[in-house]
Image 1: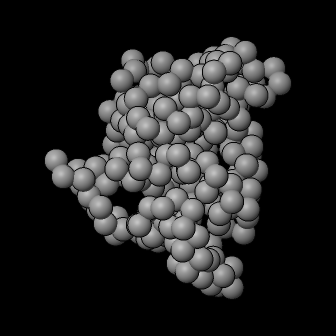
Image 2: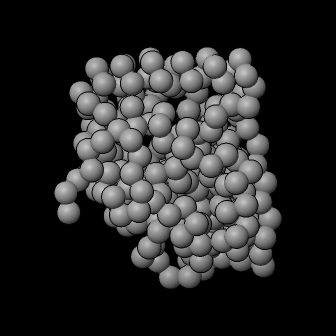
Length: 244
């Protein structure tokens, strides 16, 4: 299959190929660009997301970080005082996992190359699950949510951290100026990739808002779904619980 090398988000199978190509090619600069382009705000978002996971209910449990990338969210969980479990970090872009391996050398994190829409795990395998900035890139988000619901134990939480478009007009205007004009240029210079950081703002604009995402999570089988905005609506955190 020919890799999709266009900045405009594709659909279906072409979307999966496009995303795998993109993240495989920017893996070496991914962490640097995340922190620089977000002014390190992404670290606080990850801390907040893990705080919503409820891991203290099962401190020795096994947790899934889907669309794990270079394991930033997985490491945020394993470094919490009192955590005695382990995390499985799954991503279908192998170069991202490979680039993150030095982070997890001494951490209870197991890397798995796998697609969130077809997870290679038995039903009820995990005490909880997280997805950081990954569901926007799924070719079929509902299929991914159903898989995440399947692999969770009853009562397990799924926490999703994802970009969204701010609801306030002035914040939205500044956000879109940054996303459309500054981010693509800086991202292209630092990463050397011609279209990766043009894809990002386009994928955010084309992604359903938090209310629609919550509806899809309920449609996937989650009994309780809540969400809230962070940093004036630049990102949203969804918390979905699998019914007992």
